[in-house]
Length: 158
Image (cartoon, rainbow, N blue to C red; front, side):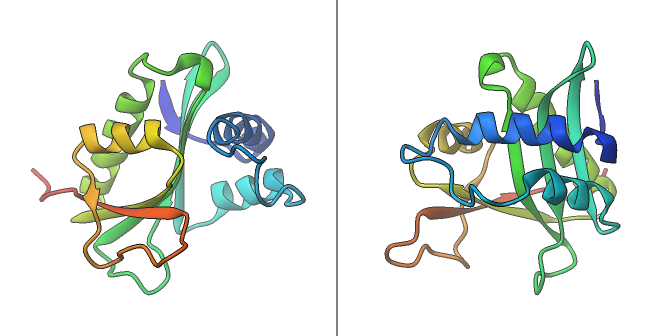
């Protein structure tokens, strides 16, 4: 089931987030001293943000967080976080979660989505390419930046 995350699920979302991110940071996670539970709770409760989660047998196995980024056009949404339990990769969970995001973006009248992905996260880059994400021409990576910026055409609502 894919549904909105609840504030009391922030710890479970954080656990999933940290497990997934640790797969592509070879030297350990940045922001190790950050209170990720508080950050996720804030994202879940933030009125201009949406956090979707995939729940299976009461376990959160996927999560996506998105909203309009500061300074971005109102018809463009930014995908800030997108994680699937590494033990569940290649089970269509990410594909289904992405489809739910796109459905929500279309319903909200969004025409485009953006995200940034870590350069070492080749698995995620391939996943996003398969779904139609392309390099964002408005945001080429700066020299030394460790993120690639991608754009997705959401399309008009039906």
